[in-house]
Length: 572
Image (tube, rainbow, N blue to C red; front, side, top):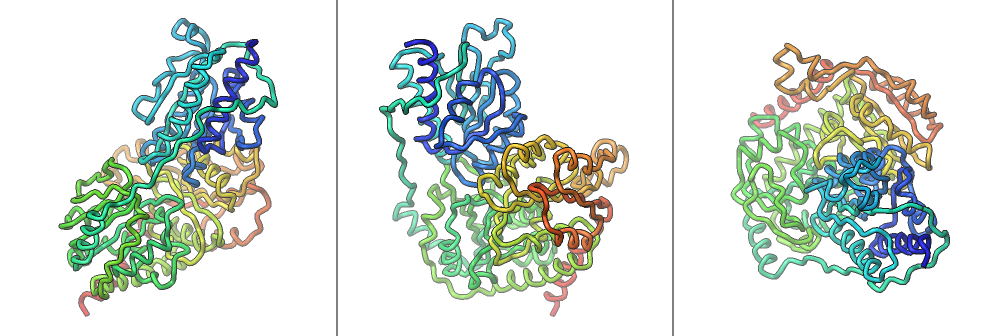
């Protein structure tokens, strides 16, 4: 067999093994050494190829697709520093439990560590950030090599999707020439599939869980980020049987599209009410059940740390503990959906009623703040109220996700909410939002700060390579607004130079460069008017100018108003 046929057979084996393992999306960045695999993917109608010239943005785009679907997504790049640029997204994928399949093309073994161009030490380069890695042999006409490749591709995808999900790395060396034959037939893989069962709780776990839930007097459910296929209908039936309030992080997906009979138990204002000292002291739970990771809210964390419930159950498919504050007393390792059929049938609880009333009060004050406010929070609230049914929202870390937590109120609309909270970084946010939109194929909205936008301006190139529908609201307060809430702000000295980091930059020229519709606003009313205007391009950028100090003052004003209302209720 000649070299071209050997190479073609080799890359077809990789492609078809990935497809059999469930990979349907691949993000490809241009480069010479990755040519054979890039051609193989492009020559298939079973996988969709997305293009992104910047490898860092490409990996985050793939991350967004995998996050939105829960399915494995592959990203492909050439050798050298191109592969190094994948690291930030790989790190997020590890800690956010996202199945990302990293394919790095490489020089053949004889060109490594000898001064060859674009050749770095790629095998194992991602270290403990990936769950599995393999350095493939160079293409050769040997049955053993081809069988090895087919099995290890499927093994890698299986590891990536097994709990806890995460990234895997396949390093693939190629010798020149790099061209393949198009239209080659399926290689006829002998290894067909990996099949896994569901992790089901045993009868003893069910008995203990039911008895523990039934015995609770002050039970609380905490819902962190949940997978896109989480059974919300079964969850709310489970909640109604318990009669417990649910503190629903926005990333849980439980604040939208829920069933009306459960609305009183969905607590979306816990971050605000838990800033009230009296409420924190009076509302200590004796039993907590948590699904998903710990929510973003710091007041919730402080509340739990101060009260430390007697029973704190974490439900998780993975044996890896997500318990950063060492609160858990019991870890139930099973598929969360498998516990939702349990019925405790608890009577109505006065404890739950207090949470419901406090939530109602805080929601009233939050709506008032949105109607009357002049800050970023008010503008965020306007955006959330305007997002149409059947859309998605992506929030950057720092202030945007916190404003989602505060100002995104329970709604019957179907709105998916996403963010990169694995390591809470602000890099790759634009690209991840594009990835979510590409996977979900629904109108998407991105709430982002000016510094995070600067971090990933290259992500806008996605709009040049495929259809998309994204509206970006950039909160431009000329710096890092989150630091105004931290102790550093009180020190005064060096604060602006080291933390505020004002740049004086605006994004109108960026919008023009990428052909995006652009609007500039400086008030909540201005944003309302802007959002009423029809969208004319696939990507729309609305730049909202704000003041960090005003933003801080308005947030504190809201929290004070909520606290005063709650104090008045306690004293009645």
